[in-house]
Length: 131
Image (cartoon, rainbow, N blue to C red):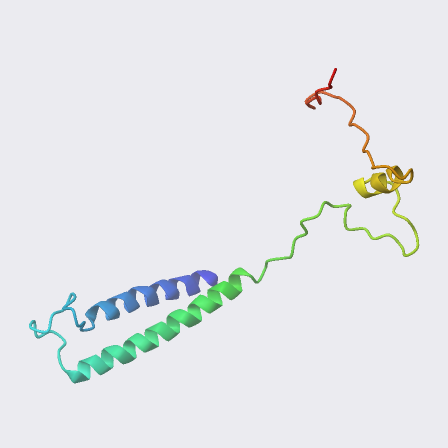
C-alpha cells in the first residue's frame, strides 16, 4: 500500500513540476510568449486549474505518507529499565544512595555538606592533593 502511494506521489511531483514549468511567466521563463506554444487566455486557465488539482493531490499524498510513517511507531522511554518504578506513598526510597540523600545526611551537623570521595579504580582520574 505504501509503495503504491509513493509511486502516485512521485508521479504527481513530476506532473506538478512539468505543469509549473509550462506556465507563462512574467520574466520569460522556459516558454516565451513569442513561441506560440500554449498561448492564450484559455490555456492559462487550464494550466492554473491543473496546477491546483495536482497540488491538492500532492498535499493529500504527503499527509497520507506521513500518517503511514507514524502508524507503527511506539513511544519509547528515555529512562533506564528500572528507573520508572514508583515507591509507595509514605515509604522512603530504598537503595539508591543518591546525591540528595548524601546531602541530607551530611547537613545534620550544621556545617557544609561534603560528599565522600569516589573509590579510586582503573580509569578514574585522581584528584590532586595539596601538601
